[in-house]
Length: 166
Image (cartoon, rainbow, N blue to C red; front, side):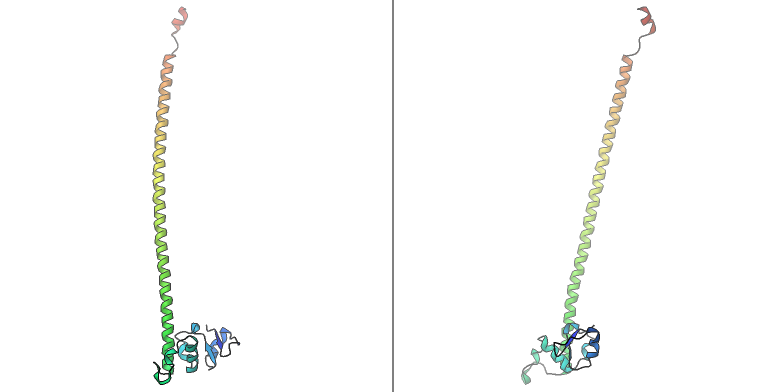
Protein backbone atom coordinates (compact mmCIF):
# COMPACT_ATOMS: atom_id res chain seq x y z
CA UNK A 1 0.00 0.00 0.00
CA UNK A 2 1.43 3.33 -1.04
CA UNK A 3 0.59 6.48 0.82
CA UNK A 4 1.98 9.58 -0.76
CA UNK A 5 1.69 13.24 -1.51
CA UNK A 6 1.70 14.92 -4.91
CA UNK A 7 4.20 17.65 -5.70
CA UNK A 8 1.82 20.15 -4.12
CA UNK A 9 1.89 18.93 -0.50
CA UNK A 10 -1.50 20.46 0.28
CA UNK A 11 -3.23 17.84 -1.87
CA UNK A 12 -3.61 14.53 -0.06
CA UNK A 13 -3.73 11.25 -1.95
CA UNK A 14 -5.85 8.32 -0.91
CA UNK A 15 -3.53 5.30 -0.39
CA UNK A 16 -5.88 3.15 -2.48
CA UNK A 17 -5.33 5.43 -5.46
CA UNK A 18 -1.56 5.69 -4.99
CA UNK A 19 -0.72 2.90 -7.45
CA UNK A 20 -2.45 4.81 -10.24
CA UNK A 21 -0.33 7.85 -9.47
CA UNK A 22 2.91 5.98 -10.09
CA UNK A 23 2.33 6.57 -13.80
CA UNK A 24 1.92 10.30 -13.17
CA UNK A 25 5.32 12.03 -13.25
CA UNK A 26 4.18 14.63 -10.70
CA UNK A 27 3.43 12.00 -8.08
CA UNK A 28 6.23 11.62 -5.47
CA UNK A 29 5.72 8.69 -3.04
CA UNK A 30 7.22 8.67 0.43
CA UNK A 31 10.41 6.65 0.64
CA UNK A 32 8.98 4.64 3.56
CA UNK A 33 6.18 3.44 1.31
CA UNK A 34 8.46 2.24 -1.48
CA UNK A 35 9.30 -1.39 -1.93
CA UNK A 36 11.84 -3.19 -4.08
CA UNK A 37 8.99 -3.97 -6.48
CA UNK A 38 7.58 -0.44 -6.80
CA UNK A 39 10.83 1.56 -6.97
CA UNK A 40 11.81 0.53 -10.55
CA UNK A 41 8.47 1.85 -11.85
CA UNK A 42 9.33 5.43 -10.84
CA UNK A 43 10.64 8.01 -13.28
CA UNK A 44 14.00 9.74 -12.90
CA UNK A 45 12.17 12.88 -11.74
CA UNK A 46 10.36 10.96 -9.00
CA UNK A 47 13.55 9.23 -7.91
CA UNK A 48 15.43 12.55 -7.78
CA UNK A 49 12.67 14.13 -5.68
CA UNK A 50 12.77 11.16 -3.27
CA UNK A 51 16.57 11.39 -3.01
CA UNK A 52 16.45 15.14 -2.37
CA UNK A 53 13.73 14.81 0.30
CA UNK A 54 15.74 12.22 2.18
CA UNK A 55 19.17 13.84 1.85
CA UNK A 56 20.46 11.07 -0.40
CA UNK A 57 21.19 13.35 -3.37
CA UNK A 58 24.42 14.87 -2.00
CA UNK A 59 26.68 12.51 -3.98
CA UNK A 60 25.15 13.77 -7.25
CA UNK A 61 25.61 17.51 -6.59
CA UNK A 62 28.54 19.44 -7.96
CA UNK A 63 28.18 19.01 -11.73
CA UNK A 64 31.25 17.41 -13.30
CA UNK A 65 33.04 17.09 -9.95
CA UNK A 66 30.16 15.06 -8.43
CA UNK A 67 30.95 11.63 -7.00
CA UNK A 68 28.17 10.00 -9.00
CA UNK A 69 26.74 10.69 -12.42
CA UNK A 70 23.06 11.62 -12.68
CA UNK A 71 21.15 8.78 -14.36
CA UNK A 72 18.04 6.75 -13.80
CA UNK A 73 20.01 3.60 -13.02
CA UNK A 74 22.24 5.39 -10.48
CA UNK A 75 19.21 6.98 -8.77
CA UNK A 76 17.45 3.64 -8.72
CA UNK A 77 20.57 1.92 -7.33
CA UNK A 78 20.76 4.52 -4.53
CA UNK A 79 17.09 4.14 -3.63
CA UNK A 80 17.34 0.34 -3.71
CA UNK A 81 20.45 0.43 -1.49
CA UNK A 82 18.54 2.61 0.97
CA UNK A 83 15.57 0.21 0.94
CA UNK A 84 17.83 -2.82 1.45
CA UNK A 85 19.67 -1.12 4.33
CA UNK A 86 16.35 -0.17 5.92
CA UNK A 87 15.11 -3.77 5.61
CA UNK A 88 18.34 -5.13 7.14
CA UNK A 89 18.00 -2.75 10.09
CA UNK A 90 14.41 -3.90 10.59
CA UNK A 91 15.59 -7.53 10.48
CA UNK A 92 18.26 -6.83 13.12
CA UNK A 93 15.68 -5.21 15.38
CA UNK A 94 13.29 -8.11 14.79
CA UNK A 95 16.02 -10.67 15.52
CA UNK A 96 16.86 -8.86 18.76
CA UNK A 97 13.20 -8.97 19.76
CA UNK A 98 12.94 -12.66 18.90
CA UNK A 99 16.03 -13.40 21.01
CA UNK A 100 14.47 -11.49 23.89
CA UNK A 101 11.36 -13.66 23.56
CA UNK A 102 13.53 -16.80 23.60
CA UNK A 103 15.36 -15.50 26.67
CA UNK A 104 12.03 -14.76 28.28
CA UNK A 105 10.75 -18.27 27.54
CA UNK A 106 13.91 -19.81 29.01
CA UNK A 107 13.71 -17.63 32.12
CA UNK A 108 10.04 -18.49 32.63
CA UNK A 109 10.80 -22.21 32.21
CA UNK A 110 13.57 -21.97 34.80
CA UNK A 111 11.30 -20.15 37.24
CA UNK A 112 8.59 -22.76 36.71
CA UNK A 113 11.05 -25.60 37.36
CA UNK A 114 12.27 -23.86 40.54
CA UNK A 115 8.70 -23.35 41.80
CA UNK A 116 7.93 -27.00 41.07
CA UNK A 117 11.05 -28.19 42.93
CA UNK A 118 10.12 -25.95 45.90
CA UNK A 119 6.57 -27.34 45.90
CA UNK A 120 7.86 -30.93 45.84
CA UNK A 121 10.20 -30.15 48.77
CA UNK A 122 7.34 -28.57 50.77
CA UNK A 123 5.17 -31.60 50.04
CA UNK A 124 7.92 -33.98 51.19
CA UNK A 125 8.36 -32.00 54.44
CA UNK A 126 4.59 -32.03 55.05
CA UNK A 127 4.53 -35.81 54.57
CA UNK A 128 7.39 -36.24 57.07
CA UNK A 129 5.57 -34.01 59.60
CA UNK A 130 2.34 -35.96 59.09
CA UNK A 131 4.12 -39.30 59.66
CA UNK A 132 5.75 -37.93 62.84
CA UNK A 133 2.37 -36.70 64.08
CA UNK A 134 0.75 -40.05 63.31
CA UNK A 135 3.58 -41.91 65.10
CA UNK A 136 3.20 -39.61 68.15
CA UNK A 137 -0.57 -40.12 68.14
CA UNK A 138 -0.12 -43.88 67.87
CA UNK A 139 2.44 -43.82 70.72
CA UNK A 140 0.10 -41.68 72.83
CA UNK A 141 -2.79 -44.03 72.10
CA UNK A 142 -0.71 -47.08 73.10
CA UNK A 143 0.41 -45.31 76.26
CA UNK A 144 -3.20 -44.46 77.13
CA UNK A 145 -4.28 -48.03 76.43
CA UNK A 146 -1.50 -49.47 78.56
CA UNK A 147 -2.31 -47.00 81.38
CA UNK A 148 -5.97 -47.94 81.11
CA UNK A 149 -5.08 -51.63 81.26
CA UNK A 150 -2.91 -51.15 84.37
CA UNK A 151 -5.62 -49.07 85.97
CA UNK A 152 -8.14 -51.84 85.33
CA UNK A 153 -5.81 -54.37 86.87
CA UNK A 154 -5.46 -52.24 89.95
CA UNK A 155 -9.17 -51.72 90.25
CA UNK A 156 -9.97 -55.34 89.72
CA UNK A 157 -13.02 -56.17 91.73
CA UNK A 158 -12.29 -58.05 94.89
CA UNK A 159 -13.35 -61.65 94.88
CA UNK A 160 -16.84 -62.24 96.11
CA UNK A 161 -15.59 -64.29 99.02
CA UNK A 162 -13.65 -61.31 100.30
CA UNK A 163 -16.70 -59.14 100.15
CA UNK A 164 -18.86 -61.76 101.94
CA UNK A 165 -16.33 -62.31 104.74
CA UNK A 166 -16.65 -58.83 105.86
